[in-house]
Length: 281
Image (cartoon, rainbow, N blue to C red; front, side, top):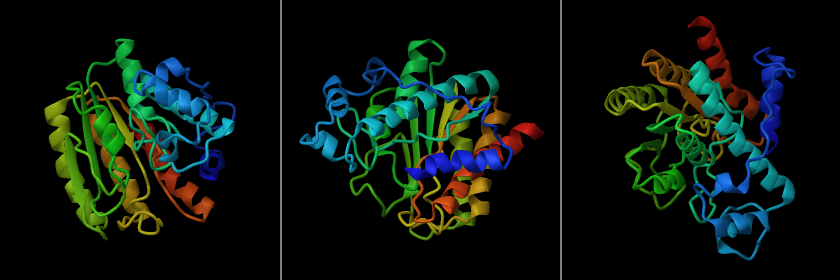
């Protein structure tokens, strides 16, 4: 949890953002969460219902601050989506809870912020078609299931095939990479997949899960990307969407290390790359 505040500190210290200019969301109401999640599950989370299996699967002890933080993360992703529609690129320094299902949490994920954001933007008639581009090292199983029968949302997950979750769900397009896949192979596969999906799908917006748990030093990752590889990955995604005039809203996704400063610096690659790209475009 400490990484999120530290990401912001890194961005301020590097001059990418200022404290005064930071956009602070307000927690989403439960009615917005229920556009994706079942009312009974939302009630159990709000009530810290520890005896519920739907809550136990989250893997975290629920508390008032944790639920509040989760609602803020969802609000940040919604705000990033709205900002992206206005200015082409926006980043939330939280979000990416892709293991949250309609009626239960999983893998440290409580509410599926990207799914809620898509439903809000659709309900406001701001978008019709969305692409979820999930490059977290773990498959986006919750997101895949939520949108399984929805032709307006295309889900793409490129992940380590032998990592969590043990039982993979079916995205519209899944690429499972072998352990130890490094920069060159990873980027070559992504280049082909990204060009194909963008040209065929033509979404109104892309929600990009930019998890850094694919890094070679991540303790839960099993892939082997370097800092430069992650920066090249992010630049590929941002530049491809921008060249096709498709707004992109990015979330930080997963990343796991005992060194919080190093982890925050790794997560900040996304904002650093986006800032440099946006300034040059």
